[in-house]
Image 1 (cartoon, rainbow, N blue to C red):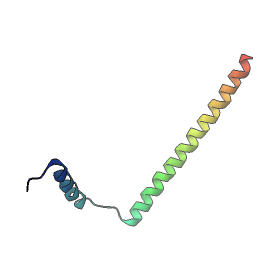
Image 2 (cartoon, rainbow, N blue to C red):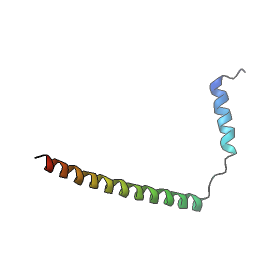
Image 3 (cartoon, rainbow, N blue to C red):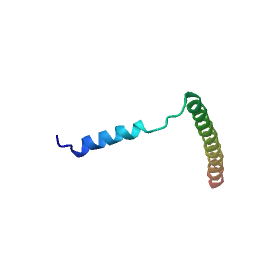
Length: 65
């Protein structure tokens, strides 16, 4: 049977996934907590920047009147 590019790709991808070293449950939980913490800090930082720029823009609009 002649294999085409798709079947070759799927077969090689499956073989590669068998060689992957998957994290343990505790590692996955710890790394997920790190990512979620970083996302929360980044969201708060961007929210504060948005608030400060909003206040600055509102002051500029008041000066324009």
